[in-house]
Length: 463
Image (cartoon, rainbow, N blue to C red; front, side, top):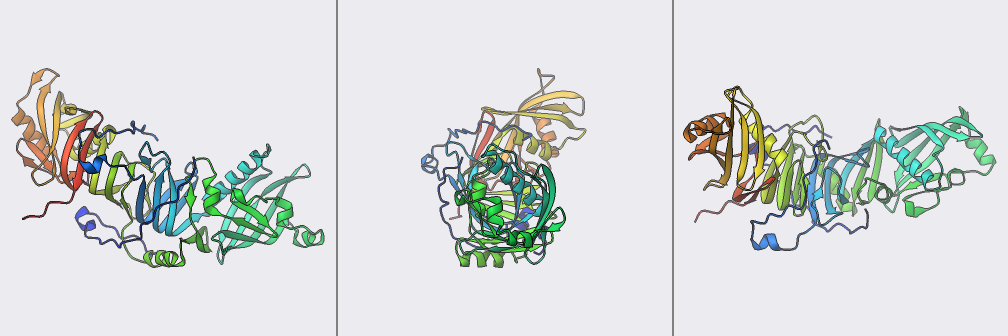
């Protein structure tokens, strides 16, 4: 895959043209941070538009490039060179929490890979789960899965037998089955350094008779000298994993990585291979649904997310990643902690204003800090929209030492100079976004306890 193109401005990113992708509903399934999550039953009570009252679609349609997603308590890391997927909420009464994998995932089309380190940790989870279901400990220890070239996979470790921990090494080939599953065919096998293939043949043994994994409903089972794995079905049954639906169309290995081509149809798989060749920055384009990500609630929206760290994938379920977010439409709730980060970044802690602290209330954003590095000041920031759809705020009721009124004009001019991307607007400051986040054309904005809530949409056409 070609490296992602580094783009360092939102204006440049906005020129990228996205290709339309088929929209399908994800199948319904009965599958069950350092910064604490806020309460997720965000009311948005001030809005009365008909679109807001309508029954919500709990599925997000997404298209992405060079995207990282970690599953199974972040044990299994998937890297998608290209992906088209539906995220369906497990708990429709709350927003989808992308970071906490609170969703079921249907991958329509994708070119996805996994490292052998993550594969090792995942196989250990599977073996431990299988043994625990039988009231036993896993007989395998010190497991290592290694991906080699030409579809070869090595598995090494120690197995408990005859009261001893015997080292074993297995080498075999992997392929995609006709039903969209992964098939691992046993090749050379050694126990305690001695070849056992001939001995197994003489004794009439094979992989199926040794492992006795014969329940396809678990998603993995043995057949003769092969291990068959339905990847989506297997992952869906594990704690901390989404319900996952995908069909593997092709599989290959390179040193350290296993590559999968996924598609509901052969045409979907072919499209993933074509799209992954395009030279573009890492991105995710998402529409509809109701989701929480990186301190934002987005409802009935359309957002684009870009990676500003081109040396690594755009990791969806990590806070603090350098992302550029564009809100194209929909309702957005900015949480208290995220708002404080944005204000600190937008104003910047300089000698003029330090120790910034904010608190979102119904009447505005309460801001306090130290002016000129020594004078405790507090004020309200009253947020609103300009007549051109930009977000803006005005300092209101500034005070020093908690009780001495300060001239609004003096404080306003200070704030206007401090805001990095701001331009004076009345007694306040208009900004194009917050900390590089493009909030689009703001149609309305209100304060709520713990949130600032806005609605973005298309800019009205001039008559």
